[in-house]
Image 1 (cartoon, rainbow, N blue to C red):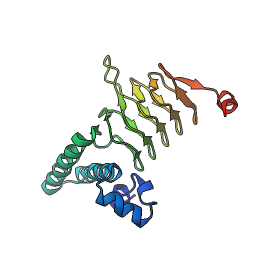
Image 2: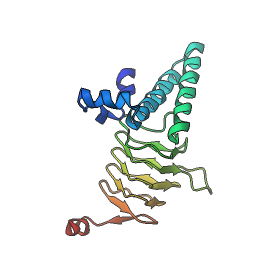
Image 3: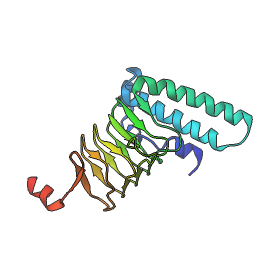
Image 4: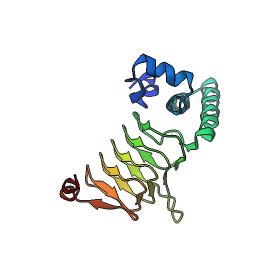
Length: 185
């Protein structure tokens, strides 16, 4: 994936909006536009950090500072190289990701999320591709999550789940059986 695709791969749902809606969002400085701006600064920082040379290091520092300024307004702390391409963030509000954590491609964060160590060790979560993390969900410790897992709102995940497509809910989070979920619908 080239740098351009990498930079423009996040919050793709904004691209799918019609031009009138996009113009309204830009003119009103909507949170989706500010979040997208934050993600683009993050990706530009990553692009320049990968390259060698003093000019690239200076540009990486510039984009990091710009990202941090926006992050302070939004309540985000997402270090470089922690989230895969295609991340979607739907709401502003605290999102803290440990620098040792890894999120796969096409993950979704709904806001007020904490992904980090448990305070006892430095081990941070490793999260697969396509994971959907609900509002207020926390993932802490030496945890691994498989691809396409859904983490419910306000869940606290402190144990690994290697079953693809599972749904985790509760405090502490536990897997919900699919037949139980279907009977509620």
